[in-house]
Image (cartoon, rainbow, N blue to C red; front, side, top):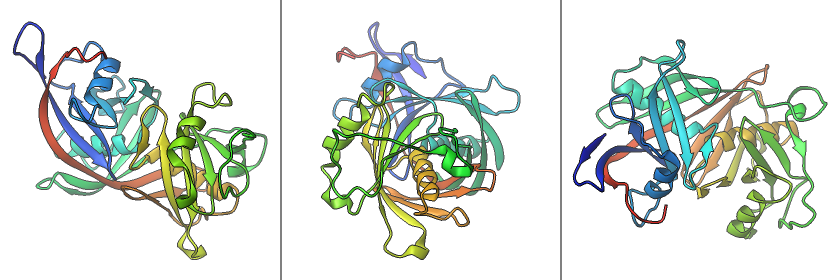
Length: 302
């Protein structure tokens, strides 16, 4: 990964991949050393003006769990480490398959969970494909039955969301999400609300924020979403956010669990499948967009 070019900096090779526009810089830590300070590197490498530019940094590591082929660590653009990232997981899964480190079905470790992976389609010549991952069950947040137990209505009396339908719903997939169903995304002061809600006192560990407009065609089982990611701001898509939207929508009757939930985000379409046991699967595209090197470390106040 590193080749000394001076006593101060080294060349750090990377692959940049995205899932529906949610892009990350990936480092191959199978063959190269793990960077000494991943949070600082994430802050630097995510800068779209002074560096490669991304929504965060991913370390692709050999597995320390026998059942898995690899371990993934993801750092948001602000350097905080994430516990789940559906888009980055799909990208890493495709890279593992296309580089011959894995076959069509395997598992990746992230944080304390095993993620089951299925390669639905792979085009190595174009370095793209479609990947399905098992996200697991949402956490139980209240005393209720079925999926209703996995949402917690949340009151934010000091936050005014135009066109809000019902109460905000908190969902946890190991990382926190707060879902707002609204009449129109066009009427939202999105950035102002996203930034404020992420750091609201109701969420001591901050939260991801999803604003959801439902399809006018009930049979479509589709939602259009804008997402504000904890630690990164607005992103083109969020895999765990798509799952949170599906959980919240099914819990309050806006969406059906019997069919795949179609989640349209700015960067593309994701599908969420919910089994009768509430096991969630996320399916969507993954694609490599470029490779390169950056000089690291650099003195940019990171």
